[in-house]
Image 1 (cartoon, one colour):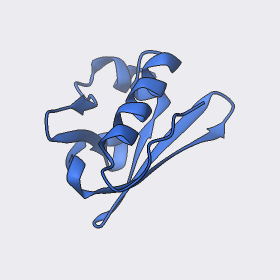
Image 2 (cartoon, one colour):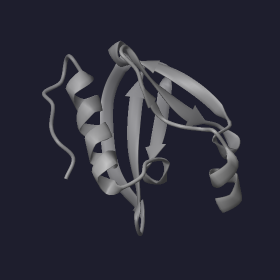
Image 3 (cartoon, helix red, strand yellow):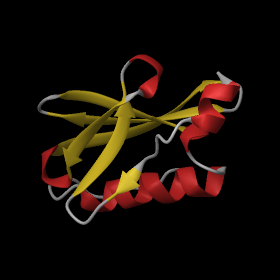
Image 4 (cartoon, helix red, strand yellow):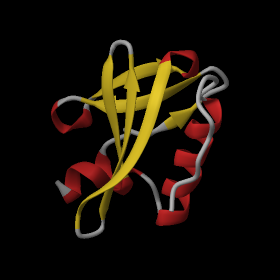
Length: 95
């Protein structure tokens, strides 16, 4: 898994109108999630130092794992950015 992570070109991309998230077995497929389709964002701790941002849309849920990002500050920044994109909800911050 470590070698796969080092040599693969998978990344999380925050675009102007959508987020692109690696998904599937070994995160080989990229799913495009328009910000307008995001219904909720939930952050939670999975195990030890692995945190998950769960993005819920009308097409399903998508997970952003903390190890996809360089550090915890980036994880918090992505979560707060996604919260700010939810038009119908009052944004709250990740702690």
